[in-house]
Structures are given as C-alpha cells and as structure tokens.
Length: 253
Length: 253
DNA sequence: CGCGGTCTTGATACGGGTCAACGCGCGTGG
DNA sequence: CCACGCGCGTTGACCCGTATCAAGACCGCG
Image (cartoon, each protein chain N blue to C red):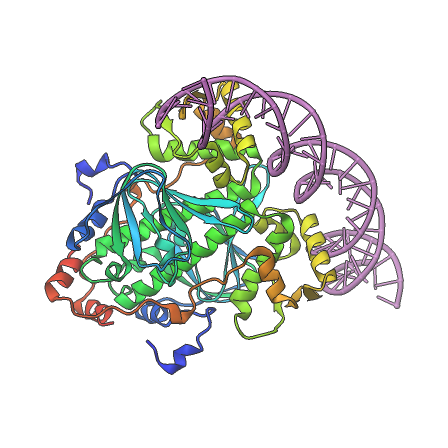
C-alpha cells in the first residue's frame, strides 16, 4: 500500500484497491464517444460508472430549460454514485470527451467478491473526495462573484489535472456555455471573464487550452486551497486482526 | 430487515444497521448545546459525528467573511464524512439545536468490528442520500431565482421533517441570515421572500415555525421532486454466500 | 461557398445586494 | 418597575453586477 511505485500515482487514475475489486468481477470496459448522454435522470438506476479515461459530467435539468452541471468526473472517479439507494437516477450523465468506462452493476457493488476492506476504504475515500469538491462547488456558486467563480474553476481543474507538475497547459472539458451551467452563470459572462483574465495576464489561452500564468495571485485572489486527497493522504490500512469473533459477527449480516 | 416495525421508520433516525455497528464499538453519546461550533475547518480530522437528535450544519467561511452553509444534518445523518481521506476537516460543524451525537473515530470506521455488510450498505446509502441532497442544493443555488430558492428550502425541509404525514407545522433550524448563507442570498431578500410567500397564502408563519398551505402549487412552481431514499427504497441485502474463497480474499487486506 | 457551433462585444434591463432606519421580544441590571 | 441593549426580522431607497438581447467574427466542415 505504500510501495515507492505508488508515490507517483496521480489523482487521475483508478485507485489500485478499486481496480483490484473490479478484477474480481466480470466487468468489460465500455467505450463512449464524446458528447453522449448515456444516463438520463429518471432512468432506472442499476449501474455506477468508473471512469477509466476521459471526462464525464453529471448534470440536471431544471424547469425552464436551465441546466446545472453538478460534477466533473475525471479518470478514477465514479459517476452515478448518488443513486445507490434510489430506484431512479438522480442526475444525467454525459461524456464530455471520448471515454472508457467500467459499468459496475449496483448489485455487484455490495457483493463480498467486490468488497474487500481495501476496496471499501478506497470507495469511502473517493466518495469523500467527491463530496468535498461538491461542497466547494456549492460554496463557489453560492457566495462568489462571477470573476472569482471562473478563477475557482480554473484552479480546481489545474489542481486536479496538472497537480504539482509545474507549468503546463490543460484543457477545460467544457465549452463556455457548459462552464456557465457549472458555475451558475451565462456563456456571455464566462466569455467576458475569460477575456479579462487573459488580458490581465492571469492566464494564457490557445484555443480551449489554458496555461496558468499567475497561479499564486489567483489563489490569493479567492483564498483557494488545494483539493485534499492526494494518495499519500489515504487513511491508514486496518490493523488486520482485531479478533475473529468480531470479524465473524461483522460479516454475518 | 423488513420487519413490519421497520416500515414506519422515518428518514430522521439512525438506520438500524448503523446503530448495530455502533453498538459493537465503545462510543458514548455526546450532548452538545445549541449554537456550538464543535469542529472547525482545518482542525485535525479524526472523527465523524452521527446525529442522534437535533440539527447540525456543515459550513465553510470564505474570504471576505462570507459564509456558505453546505448541509443540514438531521437525526440519522453523519456529519464530517467528507474528511475521511483528508488530514484536516474540510468544513466546520455547528449545532443548530441541542444535539446528541455519537462521535465515531475515523480509525474505528474502518475496523472489521464496525463494518458488517449491512452497515456498509447503510453507510453507502446515507452517503448517497447526502450527495443527492447536496447536488440538489447546488442546482438550486446555481440556477434558481431567490423566490424559488426559498421555496425549495421549505419543500426540502418539509420533505425531510414532515414527510408524508400530512399538514404539520415544522421549524426551520436556521435564522434568516443563516438561510441566506445556505441559499446564497442575504437575510434581507430572505425576509422579503418569506413575507411575500406568506402574504400570497403559500405558507403560514408562527414565529419560526411554518405550515405549508399550498404544497402542490409550490412543488409545481419549481418542479420539485421528493428526496429519494425512503427506507423502503433500501437496496436489497446481499445474498450471503457467494463462496468463502471470495470472502476470504476480500478480507485479507 | 454557405452553414452551424462557438466565442466575442456592446447596449440595456432588472433582480438582488447594500445601506439604513425601525419595530419587536427578551433578558439584564438599576 | 422601567431603561437599556441586543439579536432578529421588516421595510424602503438606491445601486451594481450579471442576465438578456442582439449583432458580428471566427473556424471547421460539407
């Protein structure tokens, strides 16, 4: 669990413990072309999707044709997790880029085959990470002015995609209308904010790719703190033997 | 698991499987007076709190003294779950009313003592429910006008507190400033929206208590759908014996 | 060449923020 | 008993930031 090889593990790949669990099931990878809505809100919820590569967006449509993008799932994330206890999907899923997904039937998610202690730990952690990012999104959308929301989005993605590996261009897997749907703005304001930020030298733009030029300034501007949950932060593995009786009791229903 | 007694189980109490897990640990209940900040963002994260009674708010403070309330935990919910993989707490916790809490050390959360299959199932489900509500909050704050946000809050709480048990007054465990901090508004707009709604006969107010008068109209107004995860919606218990080998493999780290 | 999707830019409108004054209920202390 | 302060909610006037509307530019593609 703390082999030197694991140190370099980026946030953006499937945690070892989860792919180990996966390998015990019979799940074939699923390729999905960019721009496909592969789950609709209200559909019967039978599957969660582990993202192997690409980007998936969870979103919901409101009354008057408004859309709110709720989460951007990158490689290693699980989409559709919110539907575990529900009969119908609570949000729609859409591939923002070409994706490879592992569709995991919810029924198998709770099978002893899949659920090793390490896998559970990893799942809890993934879940916690998602919840944390969701909460930050909420705080951003609820309490920041437009400019700061855009900055937050850039920093959040920079953090999740580039991480600590220095200056590097990256692509936002959303067009400006979709960015608006994520941040609670319109495409028009998004465009204006981006133009302004570029003009002020905070970022540089090449098509849809972005290079962050003044990272520290931007972080200071909105008081940004990195998303936690680097692999090193994993909480310690269980000390295996707390007595068989307890374990047996634990497993018998 | 499906005793007739369980049918009446409200959403607002600790799921049986979790309290069963709890009883295997040595966790003493903790009484907390209303208005106590018992966890601060950035503190070392060692504990999650299972709410036995009362209301707990998760919140975060932004740059310029802005506050965003992220979640309202009622009885049966778990607060601090987002910190599982992190070393420090990602949000602050505050008792909105007098509370009884079970502080569960994160280290024990993953102990085989605690983690029976039923408990895991219940935990996943609780987590999924929280995520679902969080997402709805995000959609509300991101995409609705002020009036609709307030209506959503009323319906969401009505749903979680009153449920199907007909006309009934209930209390919002937040003052108007806090409602603003939850919905991304100011206390002033909240006040105006409430006054208007009362005047238009949607709700009736007695102090801080509320009676919903025109439930269907309000639901139609914002296209509200109930929070899922009634107890009946619980996903089926595992069929226990899929082969010991699998189970053993599953438990060995 | 024309077309659709996307981004940009400017003019205008309006919802909710901000500021400020006031009322009310309650606890405290003189 | 009253005076006072404090927290909370209400109401009105004004202002600002973002939505809305609209026109145009750019680009890839058939």
